Image (cartoon, helix red, strand yellow):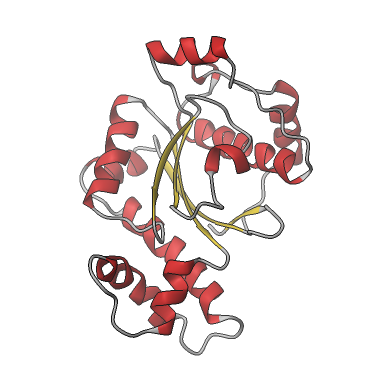
Length: 218
């Protein structure tokens, strides 16, 4: 698991909600954004959520323009809402969700928009424990309708988990998040070039349904 300076986390906790204009540029912006997410998750798991930036004044403010500080690709599972588990408000996260948090052209296009036009410095690809899409893929069998496309995207991670110690579903959840993050990093031309230029950082993560904690995988 990747670790971050405790002092940085405490600075984010003390500062509360920061505006996008206050964030430092480049890699430092990505690190600050990730620290801000983790600090919010600590508040959430500690039953100390601030629920900031959710009032009528904030609603009026973001109606004029949006300045999210992070992109989160997460599973569509109803138990995994990024704004809640990271304790963030309106206009702070650019959220993309689908079953199995898989990367396809629509997802990449949405990310490209946020990186190019909103200048978001961080993408988090987040899987979660007990993921139904992953469990269905591991179980095998015929996937009906368009569910097949989701299973097909997850299957490489399921195959890679064969023979690994521990729970195969959870190992696949982790592997799938890492694989999808790698696809984002390698996506040409916009995202790959942003990563190469130091304007964008991409990380994989896992959310635990029972504890509520988010762990960084890479």
